[in-house]
Image (cartoon, rainbow, N blue to C red):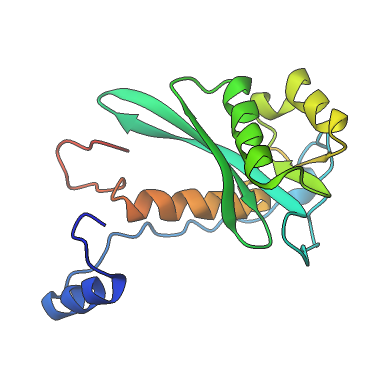
Length: 178
């Protein structure tokens, strides 16, 4: 975007000069779903895929380092289109960050018709968030503890997001973001 040229042109130039983007190596771990403690809310999207847009949303948040401080980004993604339908930035990761991101998604696309999936973070387990979901008739779905692959849609989005922005540049002395 900063160069004001298209992806294909950038790829051609990178190929011409032998430039390759930094990509983190995947760390494969043995899955141990059987030994995980039972979640407060069940994982309702396990094994099911939406067949229409605005049916299932997934959510998570991440941090971005900026001038020795952290900025937290929360997003809600439509699982069918893989499009970010709502987001919010804050200097603190609180329930308000999550609720504001949900309201942004609500203003853009309305209420999801089935459920919203997330991890078991304190922000997602708080009374205000879960009550808001039940008041709107949205079922809450959560991954089991320490099972990031159960919310892989959001984890992969953040991995690609940080890589595309160059946030994982390990050779730089001063990273604007991390």
